[in-house]
Image (tube, rainbow, N blue to C red):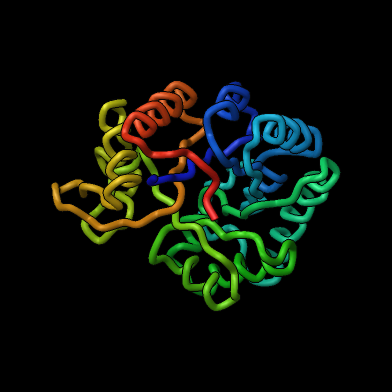
Length: 247
């Protein structure tokens, strides 16, 4: 039976978290860089465990004012130190509940920057090794993050976005361009099915693009996120695709 993981970025203060944790199979928990504190991490971890959801760290540039969305905010040893601290803070809380961290997925601008920048990607991968060796690193397929994971000996989970448009080379259409984000639920469902079942996506100019991924992202801060996630999960299961943790 075909299977796919569904992940969501949580612990960022959104009201949809509780409902999303009843739908997704893994979550990425904000751990202090762009959002989150000890209380929110504990609440999200407890709810994730209650729902059988795999827990990942969602570290970012230490940019709470910009919600981690300002590019090239920090690099080098300073970035390494804050990423290690963020991952370890969540990992310690997860351990308090008798569980373990499953993966690390960078947030926002750090994710986008590291997918394109080999040096930055290596800092992210080094932080994962130092903070919690052996967990999965999550990022775009065929990206610098994937190559950095390979160099550092980290297992990697390739991710796709169910609500983002793709270019013919398999990269995301920049958010600044029209049509970069799918709004229609039918389009989101169709893209999720194509990715999970056919390992492909249709580019913005109508070309089929091969894209083998392990996990599909639902943005927790998007209006109607829980409803979209439920519709996508139902559509996938109707196609005989099992929703389960990747790896």
